[in-house]
Length: 188
Image (cartoon, rainbow, N blue to C red; front, side, top):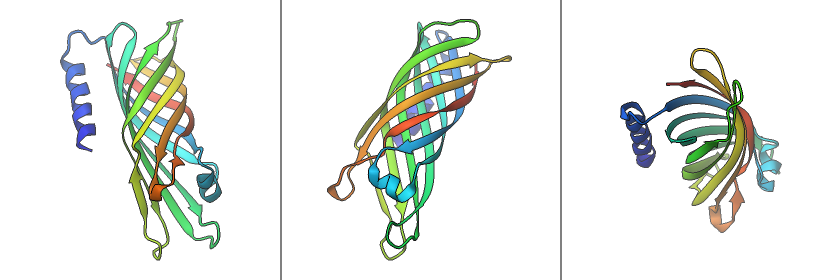
């Protein structure tokens, strides 16, 4: 968690104090998220919504550097007893986006990122105890388009493929999946 705070403070400090900065952005996003793991699908179904916040800074040409934190929560039921279980997932990424071209109000981009922190927790019935772990490595690839709105506002419509593996009890699980959604942001 300390690393995340340090990265966000650095991005903010450089973004607000650097004369070289062309664009600083802050964004809130909402995206349907569907982890790919078959066991997840058996217990929780087809996923839920992921909420996110991000900060980005454009220092070089058309390249934006980004820091992003997300929150995902889903409820399901144990396969045999039907008792309620709750899954919480908090991935934090750093990465970059490359804006391809600007056409009127539309700016398509491609991007990539690396998970600097990612934890999950499953709240199980009391007799089992909760399960929690952190992912050892992860990344994402994405594409999307910025839609410029009046008064420095913008929409960010994108689709992302996340690859994020965890190993609870020595068993590999894929928490990654597809995330497609919309963000609403402000340019400074």
